[in-house]
Length: 409
Ligand SMILES: [Zn+2]
Image (tube, rainbow, N blue to C red; front, side):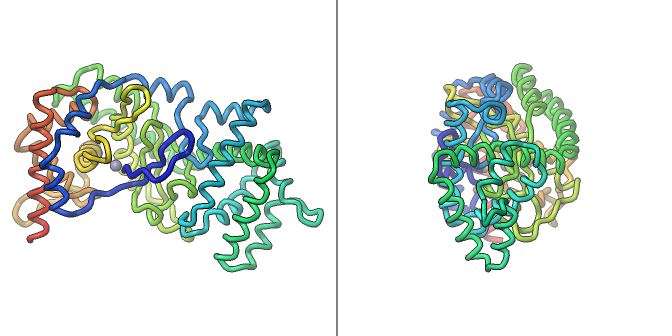
């Protein structure tokens, strides 16, 4: 994960990122690991992430850009402050729908189609009623009626008209406030949908991740402070809103099974298929994805109150390979290595996301446990200045070799 695309007023929007399978890139990286080592030795604020989360000051990760505290305020009170927040959410929304490459170019249309279902299910809620009234056509109010008209058109036209109507409505300030309040209600509904679909799987994954974390901490000499904090973060981690407008909601949209949002303690698990033909994944697959994302959340720290660090990542995504390897290694460990296979040459390997990166880390644990243990402790913020550079070099040298081996075999 990690490429910064654009910004809402609150948060950088992070797109999923997979390491490029290029031995040259890895070799270049491994030749200059000092910025990463430096970043990993910067003082961390180990309580900031969880405190902000508990106080409702972290992002909900959907298009509204609200924190959970802001969302509650917008839904429970109408005053100049909450109106301002609602307007800001609408601005975020407008800037996203103005961007052409959203969910196969159907962002606005999908938004309206989903909105008609949300309105239908929340007929008692003022935020839904007010929003529905915006779509007044020949005395027949309702977003559903507009959707029915749009369904007669092809995809491009549907999208074009949907974007036009939403942008046109938002010219008026009162309407922007109404749309913003709807975005707050929608955000609650999206989060609930995620919880209904994957709540049981997330709880099971939390249990497995907790047990694994305790065992690995013991093996690697992780200090009690870091263990307790990571366990608390696993427990607190919650569902994000499955919002197609921001990160996509299927693995086709973003090539990822799931995502952790830096600084948020919120994870998402994606649908299978594409946004036009989504499928709900099998529970085992969901639990596996949740384990990986939970270990990202466990390793979240903040630097100087405003910069988020996730595990072993540094600036400009440096360290993504070792960070993803560590998250997946722990996820595999928690599930008793379900994706480990034996190659013909007798070497163990993994058939999962980041397979080369994880296989390399697994080998490091077997052959050079001290380097592995250092990386593990560094992942949670317990960094030994002298040994982190050496451990990173050990990992990246092996990774470069593994990529070479794969390229040349
Ligand atoms: Zn990951």
